[in-house]
Amino acid sequence: MYYETISFLPHIPKNLLDDLDTIESYENVFPAQGEYVKTYASYVAPNPLADFMQLWFDYPVLTRYQVIKKALHVHVDVGIKGVKYNYILDTGGDVKTRWWNDVDEKATTILHEVQSEPFVWHSLNISEPHNITEPSRPRVSVVVRKK
Image 1 (spheres, helix red, strand yellow):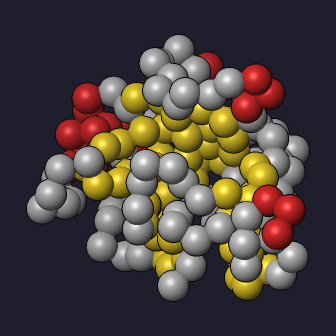
Image 2 (tube, rainbow, N blue to C red):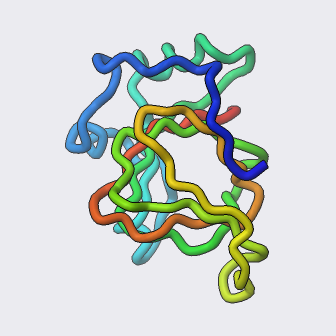
């Protein structure tokens, strides 16, 4: 499984969601360096959103806002195994998530490709090599994963 639309999580109430300027005022907990600082950020979600998301899981979860401003290279998420749950607030344009046969220069074959819809929960296999194509505007999502 690379990607799956899921229905056990509800739509997030609009009053719990923030705009991009507000999101970017929160603490960025992604340890980016160099050019990656302008590409990817993971912001701590405020307590009302985090508390709402925790209601739907029987194990502790982390809730973050994810902002992606440039294409991501083929990678496997570091320090996280399995799946995470994404709720896209802004797709960033005509952006595709792709899973590959390997990472970086060895990535020669696309194994799966999907274009996510906004305001629909999906699970995402982050243990397999994957990337996203170039967004035309910031791609913004709520991300939930096991603590």
